[in-house]
Image 1 (cartoon, rainbow, N blue to C red):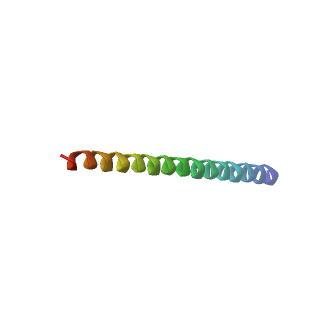
Image 2 (image 1 turned 90 degrees about the horizontal axis):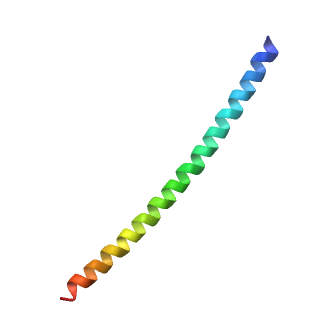
Length: 55
């Protein structure tokens, strides 16, 4: 019985570690995409402002 509990504990720890690492990688990729999107929006805003200020 004790061996079963130890094995279940190890499996649970491995599962939690896997989910946390996968979540960290996913969040890192999402934040990277948001930074890139903000960069593109800023460049677009600057370009539109430049076009409107020439008139």
